[in-house]
Amino acid sequence: MKKSHYIAILVATILVLLTATIVSALAHVVRPGDTLSGISRYYGTTINAIMSLNPQITNPNLIYAGDTLQIPEAGVTVTPAPTTTPPSTAPTPTAPPGTAAYVVRFGDTLSKIARQFNTTINAIMAINPQITNPNLIYTGQSILIPGTSGTNPPPGPDPTSTPAPPPSFSFEMGGQTLVLGHVNEMRAAGMTWAKFQHKWSPGDSPSSLASTINTAHDQGFKVLISVSGEQVYPGPGGIDFAGYTEFIRGLAALGPDAIEVWNEQNIDFEWPAGEISPVSYTNNMLAPAYQAIKSVNPNIMVISGALAPTGFDNGYNAWADNRYLAGMNQAGAVNYMDCVGAHHNAGATSPSQTYGHPADSNGHYSWYFLPTLNLYHNSFGGRRPVCFTELGYLSGDGFPSLPSNFSWAADTSVAEQAQWLAEAAQLSSNSGKVRLMTVFNVDFTYYDANRDPQAGYAMIRPDGSCPACGTLGAVTGGG
Image (tube, rainbow, N blue to C red; front, top):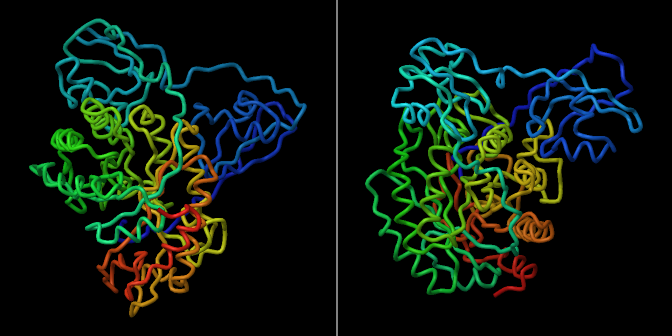
């Protein structure tokens, strides 16, 4: 759980007026979780017809919440505008002597291209002034490579040429715990998974987790290990990607049932400010970790690092999770995960409710369960299920006060916490979209009334009772 919830901020939308031939059209404001295919089905039209009226859409898989789209009315035939080639797919320029023209492929990064041609990132950027950010290059973009000649080498296998079919799965539930000290209560709630989080530092040995994994297995639980970073607010270049991958490889050899690759990488509490990038996360961390895990044990479930649910987005300290998810999808992250990691730990209403959160002034999805679920599932076209690696409701009952930045939970009772967890489990099970729901948390006792109320999320309350054990057990059938 991040130390504070970024306040949701929505950008005001601007209505795009068509100056081309007038066509009878409707206006649709894109909502979180919308897809172009879903919108076209809703209005009884086609993706191509919508794109013809909205030339700003260059990629049918990338639309953004808050954008206003023109939708042709049913029965209206739209003549597509003449096709033009977007700048990113412009014809390959003639390369000056001593250079080669290269067309960026799916999955490329500037560092990967530099290694491929035995040059440096700085050398490539020096002759490509259009590249202003070394972390942002695009599939189809033409760039020049110094010190060589010719064009692209023969392409390797395209990891997206044959997308994997949606996996078959059954809904399961677990809980995040520190020491697995409440096994009977977890079983009564119907939990079959135990989640543990490891704060990794370079030089850590995976063997430190062997006892944790073995103990949970001996108690009959499947094990999820979430591996994030020990360093908060890491500095520039502060993540040792190669060291992390090797730790993950060693962890896989210990036999956990699932591994979550990092945590809330869209905010600077967990990822270096100015370097937050879904492309970097996918290429430098998620893909190598996935390949390392599967090379050891292909049966281990790989979960992408759950993002911090937030609408705050300044492109430097944080990315809104909906924009980050779209970037992950464009970067091909779906090929390197079995499940989409998600968090929902700022709710203060029933999970079936989509309005009325005390802190919500503009209807932002991050405060509500169902809109969050739909966003994470739809961001990858439903090709992967969602795994909630943290889902919890904060109640200050039994504690002196809540931190000011968690005041939105002031009216949430323990009874509501118990009921809402059960409702979330029922909705998850019925949705067909959720593979794993991990309750945050089972039994944490740490409580800082000024900053971090972890124990307020716990199912095991200060008096030792567990109301949520009964409500969850009624949904799951107990254990």
